[in-house]
Length: 207
Image 1: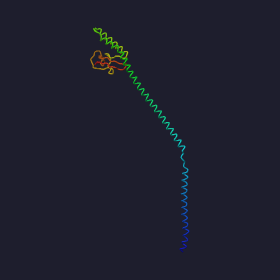
Image 2: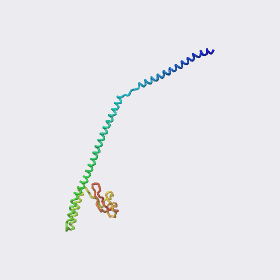
Image 3: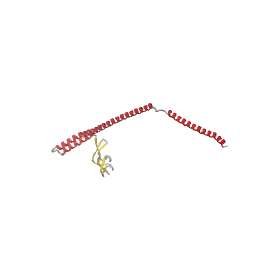
Image 4: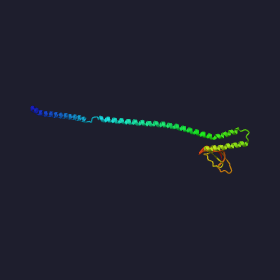
């Protein structure tokens, strides 16, 4: 009875063994297939395109050379502009100094005849009061002509409306026949060069 049972179990064991062996073989086949697929995928990857990389490198180098050239040109322009501006500044300063010098020389030239007459008057001996008065009047006329030549005009007269922009008020007074706020008395004439006030007129204003 036991032998019969043992004989019945042997085919079953053999069948189980075969099942495990088949399963192992299938697993090995799957692993080999996976390895093959991986190798094929690796072989299918694109190789490094050396010519394309060289071309890109050459293009980048050309761009860098162009940028360097542009920078050098701009730097050269900047240096030339800086030099031109410095020359312009120096030239303008020289012209400004020359204008001031020429204007001063012109003013002195216009005033020299007046100074000459003052010196003559002072050098005169035993001159009468009438002669001295005439001499001063001549000098005053010369001064007026010199100022006219220079473009200088005098202003300030009694009866004019007081303007604080061109008049310097040193007090107020009661003045008959003069409207309130008008100039009653001129203590010192004012002078202009065009519209520019050289010296404001010193005045007293009517109450």
